[in-house]
Image (cartoon, rainbow, N blue to C red; front, side, top):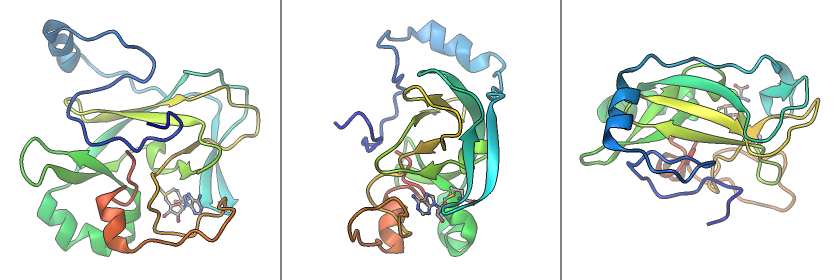
Length: 188
Ligand SMILES: C[S@@+](CC[C@H](N)C(=O)[O-])C[C@H]1O[C@@H](n2cnc3c(N)ncnc32)[C@H](O)[C@@H]1O
């Protein structure tokens, strides 16, 4: 797998990009029950008028692996998503979210800055990780981020919009592809 993108199959096991230490059952149980710190890195600002719309930028240098943001998510019902959300602009802000039962996937609205990170094919500098049991997503610096740099994640390879960073003539995929990928954002 290309480590710079997050195109991984849906996995119900929480993963950690920066540590390989497995969690014991009691550790994960006590983690589930403890309050969640809601981190937002103080150097993040929102620019309103970029070629990608709004976007998140750094006002100081941010070292690799720094925790940037912790976002609670709002899980959508499968039918609710299909019948309503997919028909609205909110759909382009949703992430795929695994379910333990058929159809094994729904969408989630990410509350906080998580919905503001744009996509970069070539300069992804932020990785994100779902915590399935606690319904949160955490974002970390993938590498050192310089002053003035935009913070970008990868939405995966199937985009529903023309990528302003694209160098070639990459095709914009249809809406159904997006559902299969990012939700609105594959974000996996
Ligand atoms: C989750 S939102 C990100 C925040 C968005 N820029 C805003 O202003 O609300 C996803 C949307 O941002 C835009 N976007 C993100 N990455 C982009 C890129 N690389 N090129 C062009 N547009 C992008 C697209 O309109 C996409 O549907």
